Length: 256
Image (cartoon, rainbow, N blue to C red):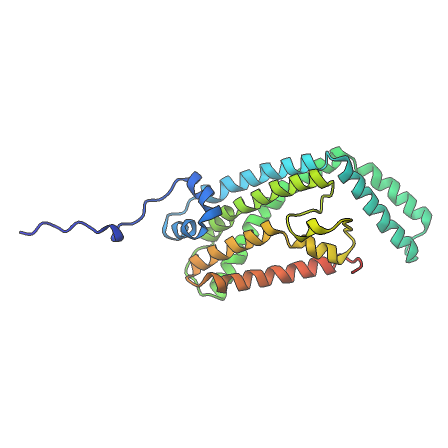
């Protein structure tokens, strides 16, 4: 009677990693993390923990940014310029503009800005998590015919939030240093006098290195779940992102 042959190392299933390992590895080896998501059992910690961290960092971001006098002054000046444009265009009188500026000033206090900013960070992160997951799931199902569940894309979306968290921290530090809340890590750093009404400036600010990294990680997750190449998934996600950014910038108005 022959002894059973032990399984070879290559045939052994990899052991699942810890949550902390997944949260860290998604930054350096996202493909391996998402392979584990695809093969493993549903794990709500994969999205809940990053969501909580993103919400906490978002609240810190809001508190720090709206504690900067330069940021608050920049917002006031931007609002005043918008009112003056309305006066110049004949859409409102100077008296109406002054009254609107007075009312706006009462609501643009640090306390109010922080309150609404923190509430926005909480709801914004929750909505974005599940909305991004829905987009990945629909794209994977309709375009790539992937056989995976919506909850798996929620896990991918949640784990990718670790990149967004790093991006928020870096952006917060840039805002503190520059006094400009529109400053992002990318070409916007080359702009000497940033104008949020300038479309070119807005486009350069949109080229956030951390955002591009985040979209790339989402593309890796979609590719691993769908069984397609990262290039295929990336072309779709980056195409959608470009259309979204162009639409948002050119709907804001301003000058080139």
